[in-house]
Length: 488
Ligand SMILES: Cc1ncc(COP(=O)(O)O)c(C=O)c1O
Image (cartoon, rainbow, N blue to C red; front, side, top):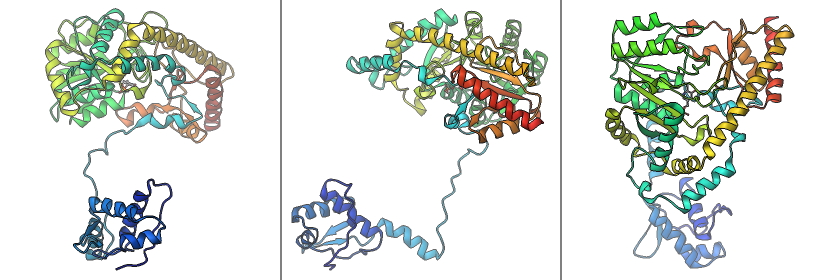
């Protein structure tokens, strides 16, 4: 029996019996106490640690419950003879070599990964499409959250209402009817549009099916289709929209199940695909039996006119799946989006979603529902649209000043969205890298190409929503100063 036991007691751990139990467990793990070894009696250890016998007994009982100790009839306590910790050590001893780290067969290599997630760490972040979170009315929204906790809609808190929180769906349906002209679609709330994309991809696609996407586009959506085994086909674009002939050729060749589009503020160029082309795209999709997934990710922010009607608003064949997100209106971390689908698809979508998640978080939805009900949501939207319009105009002004100073750059002022697509002629990739080294985040066009060989290395995307006008002006000066250094 060990009469003296040297224990490493961590004063942070409370209460005392847990501190002692943790220290004994550590002693076993480190080999200070061996398997089968008898511990000092409770009285003895209590004396060593200047505490009472009951505390030690409580620590020993805790370790018995956790499977580290056992007690014998003679009331002594010993370390169990087969310790889990020892079995992994035995593996190393028996093979006489280091245990190799397990290698997981996960299918992640070909996906893009978290993308822009770390752009917050930069002093100047020109990431496109990220809202100004500082401008979010947290105080106001807090009262909606508090309200929904003090007067909860109990029926929605269980496993029922799988489409989403009832109040939220009523409010969003009313909003989409008034503002987006959506009248004959069923709504399902989702944890952001990414979840909807994943769901659609797995529900609609067989491995080897083809999905047509904008050749310059949104990689996270492509990843969702690839994850379902789809082959991606890039649809050629021209300066002002989609190459319809090319699209028709792809459809004619067969096998295309889905066309994924960002038609209103094309991602990443922010151009609006003209109405004539949108109608023709719809006609072709109907002719060739192709589902259109319309990602209407930042429709609220349209500055030169009222927001444009989405393709889903005029969908007599019911072939458009419409996606909307709160990531731009609120912030990406809220993970709320809405999928508007033909009624005939509703049951399949809800049943399939239930396989991966019973339902989305109803508390945040319910708080948003309350926010919408009393008009706070739309007031916030009007405020943000005004703010972003000012920031777009301020960026336009700063870029024109840079042009006047002789910097070579070209762009079309977008009618909406949260970013500008700027042609700097050359070295976009080097510029982006150099900027990153100086704590400026921007994305070159290579981040958005389906086929890397199509990179012309001449465009950068400059988000204007996330920073105030003065900060953005200072950042732009630095960007073009670095570009000057590169091109000489
Ligand atoms: C084209 C596009 N779709 C959707 C989203 C939003 O995705 P989520 O709703 O999953 O946050 C973004 C955000 O950057 C986007 O750029």
